[in-house]
Amino acid sequence: MKLVHIIDTDQNMWIDVDVFFQQSEMELNLWRSKISEQYKRDNNNPYFTCAWCQTPVILARRTDHMQINTSATFFFRHIPELENNPNFKCPVKNIKQLSENEKTALKYQIAKETQQHKSLKENIYKSLQADEAFGDIHIEQVRKSIDLKQWRRPDVSAFYRKQLVVFEAQLSTTFLNVIIDRKIFYQDNNACLLWIFNHFEPTEKAKKQSMQDIYYNNNANAFVVNDSTVAQSIKAKVFTLECHYLKPEIQNNQIINKWNIELVEFQSLVHNESTKQIYFFDYEAEYRKLKQKLGLQQSYLQESKNQKDKLKVKKYLESMEHIGLEPKVPSKTKSELLVEFTQLWVKTHYLTDNQFNCEWFSIRKELELMGITTPKYPLQAPFKTVINSILSAKFGYAVGNNISDMVSVAHNLMEHHPLYIKHFMLTLKVTGKPNLLNERDISGKWRERYKKYTQQSEEIKMYKHDLNQFIEFLVPEFEGRLISWGENSEYIKK
Image (cartoon, rainbow, N blue to C red; front, side, top):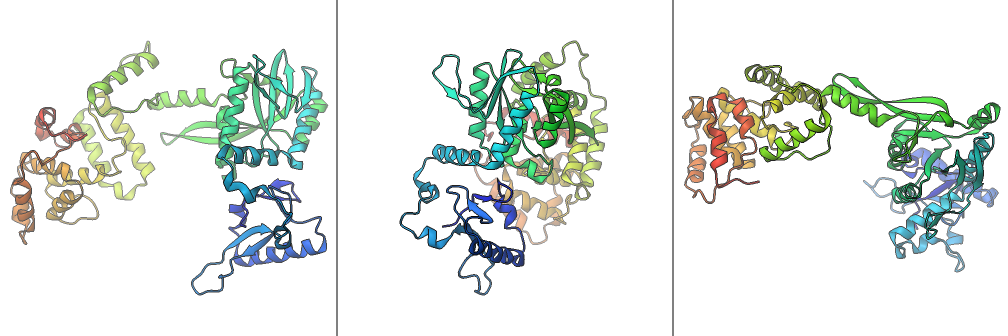
């Protein structure tokens, strides 16, 4: 049976099997030999064990690995002679019969029994004992809810200035429903919850979801207790922790996060009464300041496709977040923005998406102040194709790197986004090029295709008007007629 939850007995911690199997074929084969040799020499001291039943495991290899064009596949499994024993029991054998909640609870309980977890609990306990500000310090003491109907057994708990504070030791794998369950329980019962790591590296591993669920739920602060912090707590007689925290900064008109680390005393931490969070650096407050400085939207409210609804949302946000500020007005004219956008669009091929968005968001902000609805990410479908097509019709030559002639532009738009084909044809008309496609359609295929399209009844043809305002910005020659058409059209496809 293939196993994915493995304990490294030397380190007393769960291993990341995804990382383990990224090793080369030669390295994995050497591991196969080492694991088997170690078990034969001392079967009571194996390299790796099953996290579910704590019995030794071996590194197996799929039997068809020698076939041509078949990549090597390694996996962990129980020792065959143990697994084949009728008396052998391991929860993973019946894992499919358990509910998801039962699986999670079992995995969490097994993880809590590792030596790594026990050592971390003891370190937290010793650190608290060194600080006279803490009292009623206990390991795994039952803490009941206010109504006495529910209870939890936190790893370590204590009272700090008449406030119950509970500490949960963060393992290599902790599950979101466990995190949320404890957060809600202690929050509802007027207790503060702090998750503690024994080691934290701000690397790719720290970005794993199970770890993000911890520190993002605590204002992007991650706390560590280890032998070094315990020694400092005892020396200073003040509970001392290592704090890793994200700090947002502005670089190239974008907000980026950088990890910082400081040794902090518990008494200097922020105790948020409303959220019951305990943290050193207020990431959320700093992030809001930077968003306001860049003029980014402060609310998660979804942008409405209906302009009237969108204006209501905008007014609401301004009333809530910009009280006392002067009303914002565009700093550039529409003509200046059109030149700026056209220059940006021409060089799109040479920019990364982030580089493009950095310049585009600045233009978009100005257009929004003018009441012009724009796509947030114009490089995504269908926006990129439509914009290339409209600009091609406006200039009379193909815009974009994949299509070289105007007839191909028309065919491509009709094929993939026919809801905008009339916008394209109207752009040719208002910019004085109504016959351009017929003149360049040497094969006559476009004339035939467009004729069939125009012969369809208006009830069959569908148009999309979500880009009308933006197209009018790109093609001022419409002079409001495109917007008027969209407002009066009965065939608007949402």
